[in-house]
Image (cartoon, rainbow, N blue to C red):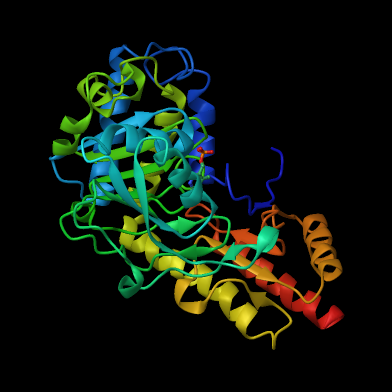
Length: 367
Ligand SMILES: *Cc1c(COP(=O)(O)O)cnc(C)c1O
């Protein structure tokens, strides 16, 4: 079989090897079905069993109470930037947005088309085309409107490498979270949220399917005048089968969920994630300034580790040599530069250890 390399891509991203191998088998014929997962009807008993099992496994992993619906939609997290305000803003037509990166700004942009957006906080710094984010705001910085329809935040900022250590407190206002790049990386208290959405392709599966977890009372906000495919209520009433869902994507999410359950659940996953990130941050902090972390220490992400070297030439040299040595996808996002190591759930501890050894060796030769 073809050899696999270390994949630090920010998304679509690495998947567990066990999941890839199992899906490979099922791509010829599902056991007892004689057809592959790509070929069966979304209305078949076989697919319905997969759908129900996927929901049940996600529910188990996150302890999701019965008063939440679990949906699998399309259009990526980006369509949620529109669906959230279209469904949840009326009748108040005002919502709070906390801006911590490019994705929350994009979410805000769509919300403005629907109603009034109050920027509850922004941690953007810099001028002109040199603007950036490097931290998460403190609770005391948030200017929340107690009468807002909801509060929106982005739990992990994939591009800048910052992450909320705990979710913001929003009082009685429903909390809406874009968790695309850290969903399932640790256990969260779902009862604190009104709605959580996540594109699958970072931490959960392939691109083309988006998980939405929504408190059922919020479904009543979806107005009948909404286009059918944009209504959470319609998708919930039809158990994500109003139209043909991404059947293969849902199937892979189920395999990933089973992989997490076998591993020991999300507490165990969180332990491993902390260990992996610590190794890299220790290497950065212990380099005497050769490597410089981008984000402030109390805002650091466990999923996307962003850092710089003294010059762009040195950064390019490291990326080139790392790529040759089998470490792929380390180039930072174009808006931040430098390097970014995305080490989602499925990224192996051994890969982080090997990268750290590589970075130390690079420093010895170039420092
Ligand atoms: C990748 C990403 C998105 C965009 O996801 P699409 O599925 O491409 O629309 C949105 N939010 C966050 C936090 C992301 O990491």
